[in-house]
Length: 523
Ligand SMILES: [Zn+2]
Image (cartoon, rainbow, N blue to C red; front, side):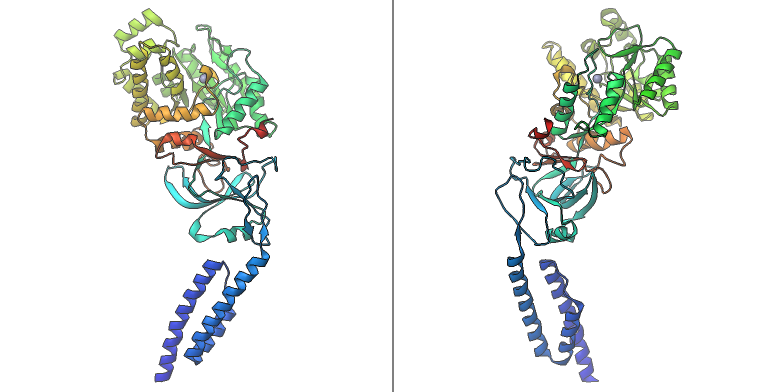
């Protein structure tokens, strides 16, 4: 009995030790020791302790020696892409290793850049909630993110085996955020007769180069805007995914230099919305000259067709538009006499009654007044999204050295107040107006949102997750999650630490394809 108990205890102890050893070897060498080997050892251990221990040591030494000798003879030089370094990969793998340590990645050897799958390992990712997760591997296949895994669970050899034709990209020290969304990009031009295909193509390429992988075009010539959207979707043009409005719907009351359809009755509004719906727009854009009754009719009509509306309004206050259930209001300075106190409204009407008199309106508005508070309440209550386009007001206020500084501070204060009150803000620019540079200007817009006092983590959310939510595409992009589009912006420094770091771009991936930022694909 005594001997049996001793043997059983020894068996159990050695069994645990063996399991631990097996686990260490498996992890280090990425191989599973066969269960037969384990059983054989167990048998010896139960019989003779010393023999068992020697057996284990000898077998481990043999195994490790065999592994290293085999590795030396079975490695191949991996094909590298524009880099002088070479890497050793297991013989079975045809994977490519891409290093982004050098900014001079040269893709001329493979002009398609259609590496698939892409294995982005050792990444710090900032997910949709702006939480930082380290040592993450993102695997894309085709245009989708197919796996997101913790490094602890896998190592490089696993990836070689599982995805033999992949491109492996070491993102040690890099930060990955979801591709950016510019919610105010007039990529088909918005001035009358300004459409130019080459210019549109350049704008789209510029946006992608700066990591903007989705845009909303809030107004342009209907036919060309829809055509541009479809051309990108069918991969005839390289660019970010487009959601588009058509021609601005305006009235005779205010003349504007932009593409417009003038309507003066509910019948005309309804007819124009029907036409644009048939043409294939995603949104209806309502403009400054529309009175509240026309705005209300337009909202009801567009919603009945499943279309959302964007308003840049003047005769209809944001408060009324929000209560009529408009979906989006654009430009964070809602110039309108109806958002001023009675006394200030009289001054505004007397000295500058027009929608583009931003400076006068800013001078007169009380950011903490009753009218603005009611407006903000209505925006929050009705879940209306707003893209402040601060870059526009920076440009306007910079042009006026006397009133500029004071009014700019009011712009920032109103933006911060909307954010703090729970208005869902979006990042948008208004390219190509005000000479804003496509793509680059969105990064500057993010800096201006930070200047308003909004934390960087919230700004990242605005430019990614909120944009996708507003466009109704959060199930397919806007955050880094399995099953979503592989739209990724890879940065060399942490944007939560400083929002300007979104400009520290290492790589852009759009629909699973690496964007050639050197312009080689732009020809
Ligand atoms: Zn605009």
